[in-house]
Length: 229
Image 1 (cartoon, helix red, strand yellow):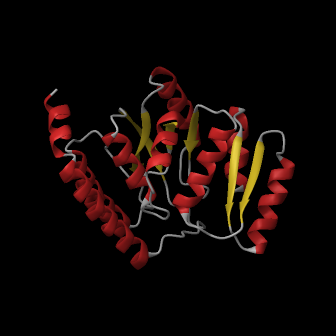
Image 2 (cartoon, rainbow, N blue to C red; image 1 turned 45 degrees about the horizontal axis):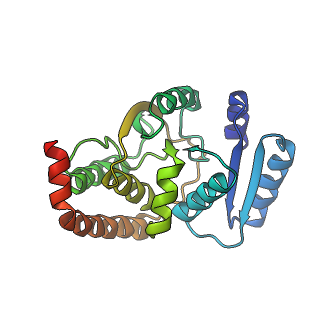
């Protein structure tokens, strides 16, 4: 996370760093970094671990309450090519009401199980949106229009764990939010620590696909009309 913050410093953007009930050692390091970068980093500490979705939602709520119109979400483990933030900012400026999604381009470090799992997930996303608008529904590198996110958060209980990225992308698409896809390099650091729980999170994601499929069925007339238009 220290390397990620160091790479972000050049962009001169406010940063909301969410500590999702981490260990004492990790919490101490986050506090040290937040103090070191206090001119642009705000640390928010959740008392209990709630999952990726819960942490990102907390970040959204903080951003909205502080008057921000857009938020870039990125993973803390160094997977993403942060130079591409310029592309996301440019795309968002040109399309302020749209969701900007990263489409990962992997190197040889990607675990094959993860790669095949993404293909399965994206197939279900295409089914549940009746479109190919969302090229990848799991990449954690995104730029959100917060007005649309705020409206969704007030009406819908989103997934709190690794099912979050899929859930919010599909539901924003259902709400008529346009999508811009941006190719971006993704690597898996050799010393990276993954919090993805192979059994529990895959079950959660499968359950989410089923839930979204049922949601798609009763929205089917609207989605078909939109598709026809």
